[in-house]
Length: 419
Image 1 (cartoon, rainbow, N blue to C red):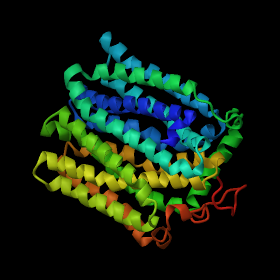
Image 2: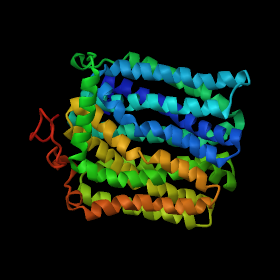
Image 3: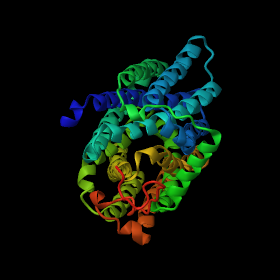
């Protein structure tokens, strides 16, 4: 594949793979360890809420990502995560590990990630021609979901065989390897100069990011995303107790693997999806995902439930890649960090609340009921697109410009795609 002959893209790609191995193992180990140390699904919900909360605050990192050296940001974030993750097995060795310590470390690690992922997204269009972006994003997502699929499937077995603490040690090693890969990365020189960011300029950039998003169609789309992510937050919070009631940590890994498998298959179809009208495809995709999600809650067989749950994530995975690529094409690179941060933050702002409420309601109502209600959140996105005439009429991906999304930039105003 020609795209892999690009040395810098390959280093970024390999770094993404190793950090994804760590992330996948870490999430399963962390949620399960909190549940087992506390014995209460509420603490799983609290852990999920605290881990998801930094995603809702990612808009605060955008102005920094736009002005800091991309390479330095990537390297430093991996080193910090490596050190923090290593604290958990060390405190366990000295018999000092508590639920409270986990609840402190988890959100800090998650907050550091909010600098790393926008930096990776910002690096991609600088290393690839815009005609290669859809392929590059698809490859990133395919590798990410493939790794996630393997690791989440095995993680339940690994936790059962070796314990969650061993997974933390492996996790810290993967972050160290990723840091070494990113050290070897060579970014274009004009993008690597750190820019001094005054407090006044920081808030100006922050305000500008919000203004661009909420004066465009992106703001309308975020309405559906907020509701959907609230439902996803609830689902992720109850998964440990739900899986435990069905068969233990092994099934927890399989349910998480179903999400990854669905997104993985969806990533494979993202290029095909991009050849069709985005509005129409989005409506059908999210409605189909909601249908399979709901079916997974009412079937009487465990493995059929896992299979249907995985099917629900195929259209979601395909459209997510499509939206990411469109954003990288139509948004000028100097705005990409703050706009991506705002959209991600606003889209996920309801996930911590959903996780917290999901953990609480798991003590009151059945997990099956919560699962069924979560499918409504996915359907809501489809309804928003169906009822909004401009979203419904969005053309094919290669026909979309900044003007199509009603995006307005100071320097690029009226130019359409800026890359």
